[in-house]
Amino acid sequence: MVNVLIAGGGPTGLTLGIDLARRGVDVRIVDKATTYCGGSRGDGIQPRTLEVFEDIGVLDAVLAAGSPQPTFRAYVDGRLVAERRMSESREPTPAVPYPNPWVLGQARTEGILRERLAEFGVRVELGTELIGLSQNDDGVTVTLSTGETSRFDYLVGADGGGSFVRKALGVAFEGTTDESIRMLLGDVRAKGLDPAYGYWFARASDPMSGTMLSPLPGTGLFQFGTPLVNGHDASLATLQGNLDALSAGVRLTELTWSTVWRPNVRLARRFRVGRVFLAGDAAHVHPPTGGQGLNTGVQDAYNLGWKLASQSDLDTYETERREVAARVLGVSSTLLRKHTEGDAEAHQRGEETFGLDISYRSPSASGELVPGDRAPDAPVVDANGKPIRLFDLFRGPHFTHLAFGEPAPAEPHAYAVLRPGARVAGPFVVDVNGHAFAAYEGTSVLVRPDGYLR
Image (cartoon, rainbow, N blue to C red):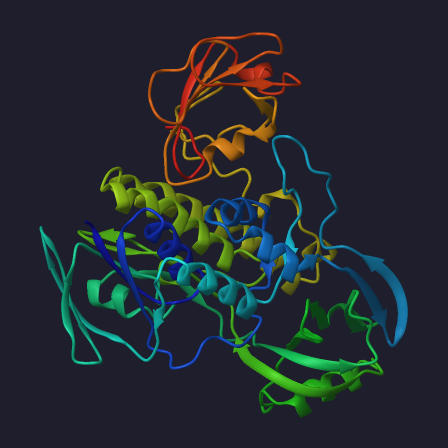
């Protein structure tokens, strides 16, 4: 049996732990923190991440605990001037069942992931820091702060922007940190504000530079974002003072978590060195504009999990995910630049942040059904007439073979996808509205466990 150590118990490490555990991999997760994260941090869950969460069995809990993106009320000099959404609401389609971002504080998201992980008998080992590592062709030897020395087949560093694993490997973390911009982020109680809305407070002289309050579902709290000027500290008084200066008329009563953020845009030169891998913030750090950090890390884990479990395609992890991370960093950085330049479009989000356009196809490839493309979804019915989706067939730690309009191969998780009225020998499903056949009739595809074509 393959055994894997994950350093870091945040969303990336937890997602990877779940994906490995459900595949029968012996996995451990260690984290140097002595308590779980208590702040909202990354509170935006993008559509592609919702698809990942569906597959690993946490989507229902995430949807129940969270809410759609709120409408924001914009106030200038204390006067309501507009209501707007960060992105337009979209209706689900057969190809995109979860088309809109979802809001849930990171602490709650991590809690849901930990609950799912515990179903496999795995728990995060808090207060356990990775302090040494060495590797050869056969495995990785690690030393933990508890005094334990152990051997693993693979090690994954999901231990954040200050990653010990990345530093121990000597991997460069290329990029920039802008010390001229500092933002104070925190979770607060704001008396009198309707939690069904988000809020933007600013001055008429500088309407694009202000203070944001976004509701955190199920907590009674708001996530707070405001510029932090020199000489001010990360305190409730600082937050209150900024609001008072904007004539917001809002009274804050409690600060439960805060951090000072600086624009930090970095990408690891390598995502893999031998039997050691980097994922999430250990491999790439993003500005919060675009809401990409948590989401890109979760998707790193989803890409890596099946490869580690099968010990196959491991060389593709770096090539696939580093390219995606570089592109996402570009999107986040563009939105940050617009924000600092006072561009009104800085508050708007398009589909480029949703993760649905991610493709691992070769740059030279063209046409439909190219390896690396996101697999199609469509409403279908099984041989008994029960309504399901192609995504339902993909769900789980297996490859799925789809043959459109012809018998499926005699192998597990292989299905013929047929038009209404057609029948073939062996397992089949019926494409009730022809959605999949519009592009795929007469073809046969193998779908990877992460939902991309192989």
